Image 1: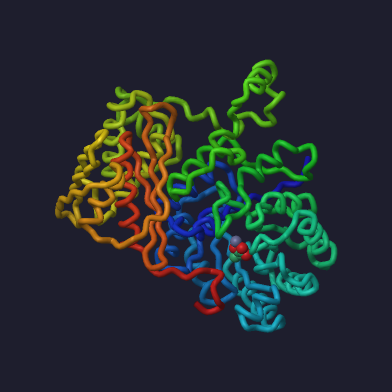
Image 2: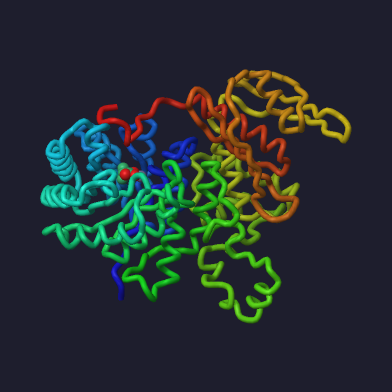
Length: 514
Ligand code: KIV
Ligand code: ZN
C-alpha cells in the first residue's frame, strides 16, 4: 500500500481570485457540497477577513460540510487569524492556513520587513492559530523563489511553533519540475523536524507547469497537493485537480502515493464550477474537455472498437463522463425532480426556490423531452443567480431576418418596476445588449461573450457567459435557455446585477496591511 496523498482543493479561495470568478455564498456552498461528494480531504473555503461576504461564505461552508476538513486563509496577522477562527468554528473539522512571503523580493519590496522580522511574525501567527485548532498550515509565500537556507530556518521554527502542514507555494509559477522536486526533497532532508509535518505544494501555472511541478513534488515526498477544479486560479491558474488526481490514478505503477477521491464525480464538479464562474472549459483540456475522450480519426475509432486500450489510457466512466444520463422528462413529477436534485447534492434553501426551479424544469421539458443532469445544474444556477437580482428579464422580442436590420425589444423589471426599451444591432444579441444599455446605461465594457451547449443536440440549452468590466472591477454573468438570445440577455443582466452588488474585498497577497 502506498502513502495517502492529501487533496487540498482551493477552488473557492485561489480559484475565486481569478478576475471575475467571485462567487456568492450559495454558489460556494453548492461547489463545496460537490467537492465533499468528490471526497476531497480539505476544502479551502475562502479568506474570511477579505469582506463580510467572504466571512459569511466560509461560515456557511463550515456549517454544511461534514466529511471534508474546511480551511480558511489568514495572513500572518492576529486580526486575520481571529477572523478565520471565528468563521470556521462550527466546522466538524477545520484548519487555519496562515502565510507570509519569504522571497527576498517580496520581503523587501512588498512587506518591507527583514527576514528575522518575517520569521518572528510567522511563529507568532502559528502559535495564535494553534490556540484555536490543532490543525494549522503554514505557507512561505513565493517559496519557489525564496532562499533555501532561509526556508529551512523559517520552516523549522514554525513546525516547532505547532504548524503540522507546511505548504511550499510556487506563487508565480516560476519553477521547473526537476528543480521543484529536488527543492522538496532537500527541505525534507535538511529540516531537522520535517517528520513532524506533512509537506504540501501549491503551484501556479504561469509557464503551464503547475501539474508537472506538483507531481514532481509528490515523487519527492510531498504528501499534500493544493489544486483547483479546471485549474481555476490567480492569473494562469493553479494545478488542475482532475489532472493531478487522474495522473496519480492512471500511473499508480510509478507514484509512491494514492488519493481517496471518487473520480467519477470529476465531470460533475468541472461542469458545476464552469457554470457558476462562467469560465468555459477548453474542448481539448485534459480529463474534462469535451474532446478528452472523443476519437475523431477513423483509425483511432477502429482501434478503440477492437480494443479500447489501443488509444485510451483512462476510462471515460472513471471520471463520470457517462453518468450524465437522461434523468427526467415531461411527465416527471415534483418528487422525482426533488430526488434527482438530492442525488446531485443540491439542496435548495426554501420551498419557494424548489417551486421556481421546478417550474423552469417544466418549461424546459416542454421544449426538450430529455432532461439531463447538466440541464438540472443549469436550471438551479439560473434560479439561484436571479433570486436577489435588482434587474430581471421580463420579456424579450427579437426580429432577425435576412436583408433586415436585427431589432430587439426588451422589458426589464428594475427593483420591481417594469421598463421597456428597443434597439437595432448588428445581430440579435447586439440589438438585445443595446436595448438593455438604452435602459440602464451601465457604461461597462464587454470583455468576453461565449455560448456553450449544455447537452448534445440542437434542442440543447445554450449557456451564455458574459464578462463585463467597469472601473477595474470585472464580473462574469451566466444565463441558460434553449433560446440563446434569451440566454444572452439573462447573462448580461446577471453580470450587471453582480456589478451593482459588488463590494470592496481585500486581496490576500496585497501589501502587508490592507
Ligand atoms: O500562491 C500562493 O502563494 C498562495 C498562498 C496564499 C498559499 O495562494
Ligand atoms: Zn496561490
